[in-house]
Image (cartoon, rainbow, N blue to C red; front, top):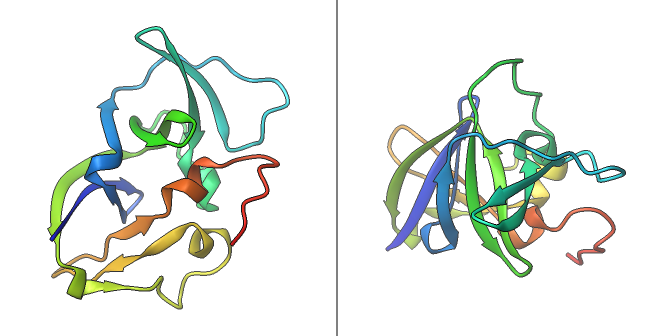
Length: 145
């Protein structure tokens, strides 16, 4: 069994391994970064530590969030330290079986498909599992894959 921390962008359910989630925060003041890639929303101060914040909708090629819509910071661990992902709302911790795991659905295309590890077929939902190393690598990092 694997445990996923689920979250939502519009009606889409996503998940990341629960051991890679540091915490979930309410919106925090962002400091914009000049000349940063478009998916970098800015930097937040997390108890004295500067944390890059990614607009996950932009990173995944999804439509922009409606002006004034609620948002949460899902802080995950990466090779370079914590990264905050802007999500619409956090969900539950899901216990999933490896038997229910499948490659990314063929209906997904482009950047979204490249940034997913796959999906779990569950009753009533299909949580898409992010490939966190790829998602958190932005700019001219030259990810292979």
